[in-house]
Length: 452
Image (cartoon, rainbow, N blue to C red; front, side):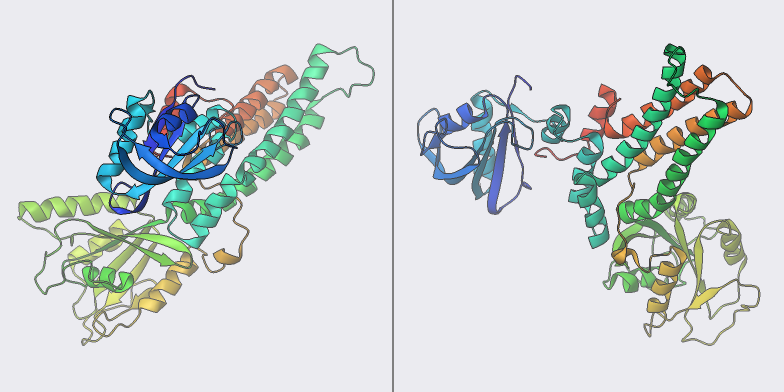
């Protein structure tokens, strides 16, 4: 339990029907009571809502009509006493009430500090804490379900079960090392250890395999639209988004900078980026755009390479085909409403489109689903890892167990093998926050909004 009391606005700052100011800590109810004209909050039951007014503590003037919720420790989000003031949603009045709470002894909460306190007070583990932000940022039903499952503890249970199996291996090794005289203890040999470690590795491999889909659900697919100027890249972005996001003209080089948008395909977010057309240019601004395009190609998870059906393949087209050959890509031959001048014989699988006549967009979306195996995501039990940090830690744990297997193969002594197995156990613990540094916590929770 912390000694100080924190306060923050928990709703988006702006004009609206209602704003919420949240306080958490030992003085939360005391501070709320000094501001509230209504029932004595020190005497009311926990988890009750009360009608009244907020008063200026200096001149006892009524500032707003409110509903105030009292939640007593430990059955709260942070496990501390919590007050939530539901006031009218004006920017001025909301800030005024927050200012009163700070004047009376609360301090402004840091980003994510309410959730950080929930973690440090052991109400949730670190994986659950991180899922709170995933819940806020969810853009599709699938990503929402993924976040809810993680917040519910399903991901944590997955890791806890792995950790329990690894701990069992460690315990068997240590019994042999510390108590070799026990008659009923099974002598742990390389032959006994090997299948136990292989069993855990098999489970890790399965989790990491399905985690690829989990990561796509959580973060979406970074999709970069590339091609020469004036082949229809911006038109493609607009058609996929069903809105005029990008300026479309017949003048080559109209798109000088990156234009971004989001669409939902089969329950997955496509993070679409329309880039400047790649060509040799002396225009300084356009040249900067071309360099940014090349950077985006390197970082992309999917390339939509647009070619012009009404022109022969140029050297710039061929450079793009070569530049993107090792990436996941879909080649789009656009402008099929015009007479074809392109030799398509040497092109790999491609899709033909006409932005003018709205042809080929549905076919393109089907191809994306097929490429990433997204067809049945809504029907899957999406109960798996999706967080990049979690996946990285699990991969490190897997590497440690693989090292242990190599040591078994080389007939290294059992107590030396235990070092690698313990390392795997620690990495799994870092996912849950069992082993975690203050710097990591500060970095993770700094990404949260102030009132969460």
